[in-house]
Length: 322
Image (cartoon, rainbow, N blue to C red; front, side, top):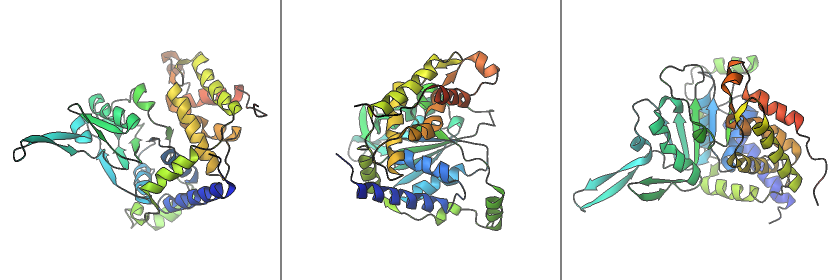
């Protein structure tokens, strides 16, 4: 379906209002907010990795409050069990059968706080639900519904008592980003409002869960020229061929890249993807999907450098492919 100009304009206007709504709680972080909302409308999941006290949880809660749907929070700890996340079946003596009691993962927006503090067994409980939007308990599949988004936070500084996410788990996150410290001017504003300990409560619902699904369906119709698809493939190939990379970007990552680029373009009022859209999303979409060799990690090479080299070396398309 061809997207009309007025449809693109309405999408961009709604997107800007969503950004402004979340900005009520997260001051001065427009770019990470736009990335997070792009992730939501693209049907993906978001990983927030940053030092303590930068507002990761506040951002996740603010996005959950923006959507007029269900939301839940899971505080990941070493003793958390998979059933604490997915739910459990309990025998009902009155009916004489086992009833399923859904866990906190059955919500439109799920905040997985400090996900790397849970054991690998508990982390793996999210693998199926993040990929397929359903949970299988005792051989029975249970759908989570739509939209469904996991926003996970992670602290890269404290490593004691943590379990690094495996590559298969990282690959299921559409984007990985960080907030960083606020600018001095914004910091002064936040300090002036220090009495308010729950800024996310100021964020009121602005969009229904059904509207999120509709906006995502519209973004899926954004035109992506073959030259853009070849450009994304070239960037992925560059990570796979890099001498300091043990594992490059997967096909799942490329497919996620296309979905995110479509939403990013439509959020700017365009019904087609440009090479600049791909460049803007290269790091948040590809960075966490690159696994460096042990020697490269020891030498101080970063995935940011690898992605930046790929963007610099792979020429962007200059004309459409007929």
